[in-house]
Length: 144
Image 1 (spheres, helix red, strand yellow):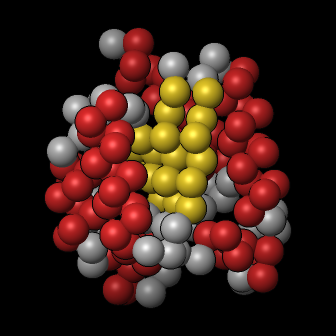
Image 2: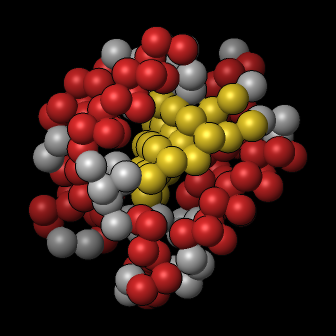
C-alpha cells in the first residue's frame, strides 16, 4: 500500500528552525525516519514538500484521483488555506493531519485548523513521532 505524505511550507528547513519547537532532525532525517517506519508497517511512502499552495492542491487532486491515503502537515497553511481544505475534502481515502508541535500550545492564530474538519484525525505535538503515530493510525484506518 502506498501513502502520500505531504509537507507544507518551511518544513524542508527544519535544521535551521527553532529546535525547541520543531526538534533537531533535518528534513532528510525526518524523511528517512518516516520511510523506515512505513516499511516496517508494509507501506511505501511518497514524501513530498512544497512551499507552494498550488502544488499541494495538485498533489491532493492526484491522491483523490488515485484513491491514495494521505498524511499531511499543512504547516502554516493549516490556519487559512481553504483551497487546500477543499482539495483535501475531495479525498476518498483516509487523510490524517500531523504537526510536529502542538498548535494549541502556541500563538492563538495557530489554534484554528481549517483542515481538521475534513481529516480522519489529527496528531500533533509529538515531534517527528507525530508522523510515526500517523502511520500507525493509517494502518488501523485501512484495515477497517
